[in-house]
Image 1 (cartoon, rainbow, N blue to C red):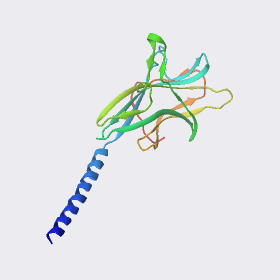
Image 2 (cartoon, rainbow, N blue to C red; image 1 turned 60 degrees about the horizontal axis):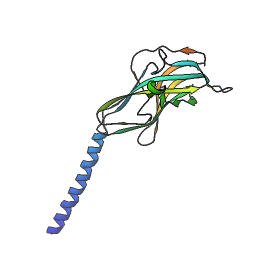
Image 3 (cartoon, helix red, strand yellow; image 1 turned 45 degrees about the horizontal axis):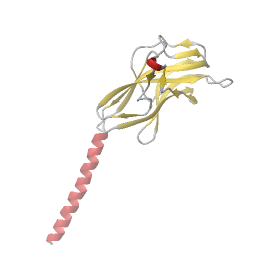
Image 4 (cartoon, rainbow, N blue to C red; image 1 turned 180 degrees about the vertical axis):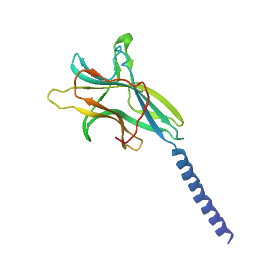
Length: 189
């Protein structure tokens, strides 16, 4: 009978230790990942903010953006392949190009996470990144849009879409006003 009591006690200890680990993991994941954005000026072209511009290769839409990642959980969070996606209504029109660097020689600037648009948000941290997204107008293709959405993939490879702005994407030369404020990006759009 003594060995049966020992065996039952060991089974209870094993099950309770697994239960404690599960509860600790749940508490570690509590907290949120919040993403904020702020439209800024281009790093290497003076007084240029987001909008439609004529370049040497034709018309393009450029968005210089500060992205701030706030992780209030006790777990490292993955934010992979951050990009801006253009929509017309609920239809995806185009994905913008993530610019890794701009300028030349002494005036060169490297964007995002040393040129990568994937990030690790450490536990209980806030990090800010300077990013730049661009899209060239394609001849004969209708790329008009009315919404800009930030897209990323999380640590489970799930696509996340967060509303950034509603704009008139008519491909006419113009700059949009900068509010100078941080925007808390949310799913509802």
